[in-house]
Amino acid sequence: MLNIIINGQGPEPQNAMIVSGGTTRLIEIMKGISQKKDVNLYVVSSESVCNIFVKNKLVAHCQILQSLFKNATGGFKLLIDSIFRTVRVCFFRLPVDKGIIYGPSDFLWDVFPAFIWKLRNDSLKWVQVIHHLYEQPFRRKGKNFLVNSLGFLSQRLDFILIKRRADLIIVVNSITRQQLLKMGFDGKKIFVNYNGVDLTKTRSFQPSIRKYDCAFLGRLNVSKGIFDLLRIWKNVIAKNPHLKLAIIGEGDKRLEQMLKNKINENKLEKNIDVLGYLEDKDAFPILKSSKIFIFPSHEEGFGIAILEAMACGLPVIAWDLLVFREVFPQGMIKVSSGNFNEFAEDILKLLEDSELRNGISNNALGIASKYDWDEIARRELLLIKGLQE
Image (cartoon, rainbow, N blue to C red; front, top):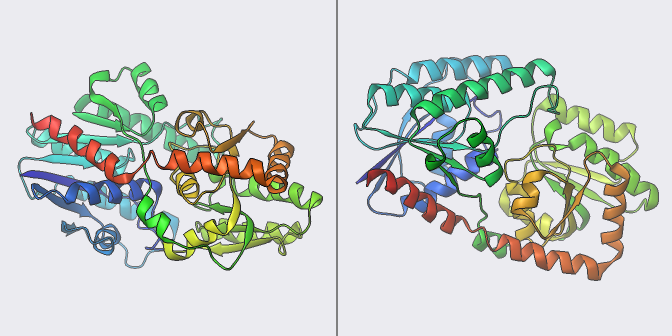
């Protein structure tokens, strides 16, 4: 019997319905793995994470670590609560003595407890997922220098712990693997296993009656390029004032209000609908009723939202990130970062040329078909079971 212990002590999401790309990967991988009769899942985490497992009908033994603050909403309280649970879980008695510790992200609250558990019991095998490396604080966009610095230093501390004790490291692109090798990681422990998409579910949805020319789906965060989005769309509207953009997603309430204020300041309220968080049954039909997916994100380890859009048959326009060249060689128009005029021109060109749009759409569907969650979960299980041989 294979026992997999999943730790996750990150800040509780203010909207329990919203999950990050890392959490999406965790759930989809565990869906595939848990189908095997010889696997037991144990989750040591917050109530919200355990509820996500329940919502997705994942059979797991959940050990809930109660929060320090009840119904906390402020960012500072959420962070303190996460630190409190991270320290507390290090002294937690694990439900099994043999098995796999599975770290779904390289955040400190996932890595540090795994490191301590491994120190306490070396017969446990530690599997760690690393999504991407943070850039130097002065290069990274989306947060202030202090936050960027803390994130960068925290990840570097995590890497010291992972390098010393992890038995298997899974990365979602080969670029990250090369970066880790340059940092002195053991290449024999690092394996690339991409992210994916639920093709069956995606294909089951019909287009919405609400039609949009373009759509964006993602967390409302500066690093996702939400303010670039407005600048690009303003250039588009200057050429064609009748076009409509759907923004699907939710994030920090302050940023969300700032986004809406800037939409009003730029007189774009008739051309942009901010739809907030939508469940799949509402989000995917809107994607399918759109013509183009635009995603001006500044940093990605993979781009699950892009893959979901491609599975809906949408051609994608995005900034030319190095990782996109690897995972999305087709189905996407890549624009030099910061060239807002070119981005807008590419949108207009695709909207006007249906033949070109359909060609890129077909390529996008082909790319999406290569990344099925079931197959990716199967590969991950093989990697994990290899530790027991």
